[in-house]
Image: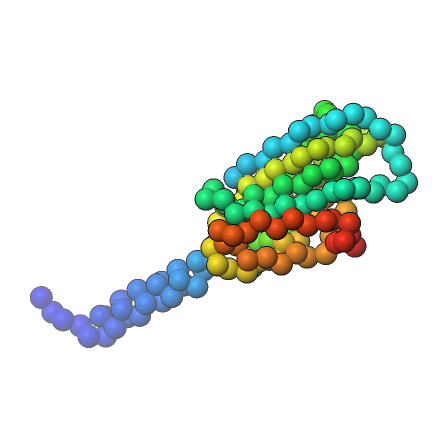
Length: 160
């Protein structure tokens, strides 16, 4: 058996490079675990104001992940035919969370008492920024994901 120091250095370099690439790309990906809603309470004609009076966003820690609860949302009543969907992506500590109606838009709105989503992949003790979009954009919301997290936000103060 012949020992080749140059070949050993190359192999060691390849393994070190792979290890470094694996370690650097280990950014936690936030992913949607579940989403649920109370559905359309009643159909209403479209109003110009589009206000979400009394609407809150609640961010809460759970062992399953970040629980995002939206109360008193006003959605297009197309949710009666298609439901509610969402897109979740993250870049670093910024979580982009977009909620939208599935189905063709109709000329009516629908109050939804509660929508709940659970996001996995967050690290306890880490600070995050939530970019929330549901029927409009809201100012970014900063929070630290830990066991004491129970942040209640009046969304009227965050409307853009």
